[in-house]
Length: 230
Ligand SMILES: [Zn+2]
Image (tube, rainbow, N blue to C red; front, side, top):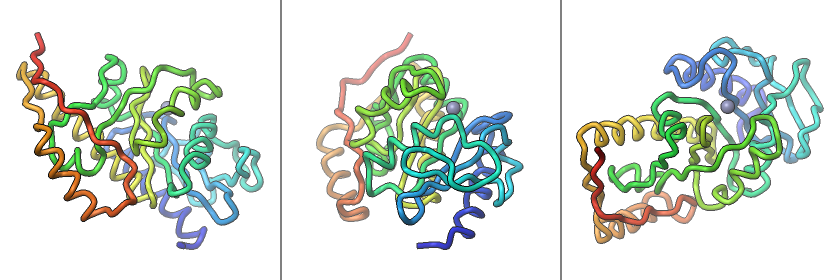
């Protein structure tokens, strides 16, 4: 396991990448990593993710109580605690508002169509959780049904949360979700979609178990008839 110092630097690095790519604006977004003893290293509230320092991070216990750090913990800590509690395999979480994926979340459209083979293999599909007020337990409750079976979730009228066995993997899933949302948007603009067929999805499942073993939780999408959008 990397040292705490290294993990602090990783949060700074991936926070900067979120900001550079426009996945967050102003003080949006938050990142966290699980430390030994089920403590969580997490970004503070009211700090640009593009201008954080390693010393800014806060450490909380599994109930979210601050045990180290000078700043206040992110108000979305409840969402992070929920994912760590439900998924012992998860070591890091990223939450952001990437504009295209968040546009889908604001339009009430899940990213569940099997349109791109590598997204199907890596993430399965990206479900849409109903809206919950940020900073309240309601928000975590909306995510709860999806956390066991998915590694990326759209949050209605809000943004996206992704998680993985390292911060790098959690961050990469965020990039994949936004990239896939852009591709899905193009299919909407073109007015038609050609989802992968069931037989092709089954082959991807075999390929996934070869690449990822049993480590990946993400459920496979259910193929649907091609859709037309007006
Ligand atoms: Zn948010």
